[in-house]
Image (tube, rainbow, N blue to C red; front, side, top):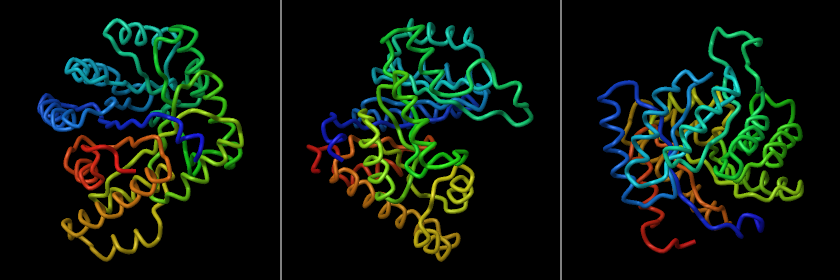
Length: 289
């Protein structure tokens, strides 16, 4: 973890773009609660193939007005360089200085031929640097437990290294519940000569069935003991929430004590679960790790 301890710690929160005006109103309320913690930035996700493009732009520009930097997700699958360039210019003109650059998922029903001009995140990172120079800090994704579509962990690490060499500034990981998986990944990155901040992505546990379904889909491992305990609680939401808060708090403590360069919370547009962990960690005070 030596390579990560050299970086200034940062904390951030991720949202998804609301579908309705009521959803946006609720998101702004969540934003106001989380903004009191003075995060380094907020981020806003981008649907498969750019399917939430307009809503993402709207949410990013609205959130960014409030004084905390907001970083839009931008994916390259299913789009063109011309469209990406237009979005980069729009964001630059509106004071956005950070981008989360992703390959993205192919929307359901679209064939391989519709992948677009750029098929890999490394190509998107290269294009952002070519088009916008060093204006944007570029976040990329990292997978401590390997991307579900990777042929092997070695292949996955090579893909990550290509994104870094293309110009990535830092990385946010897929969520995980095994600190050892993150530590092992960082060790492998260090040996591969990768030297950028790799911030753990943190997913609070509030709904066991949704968590299991999403984790199975995206390749995030839920340790067997956590799955068994969640199964034992059944539909007891209060017990699931208390247990999840304890598990995620302990995970974050272990990560920060070992030198992780911050935390990135996947909020699912809710303030309470992330703030519960935040308060347990005492992050409003001088970081105690």
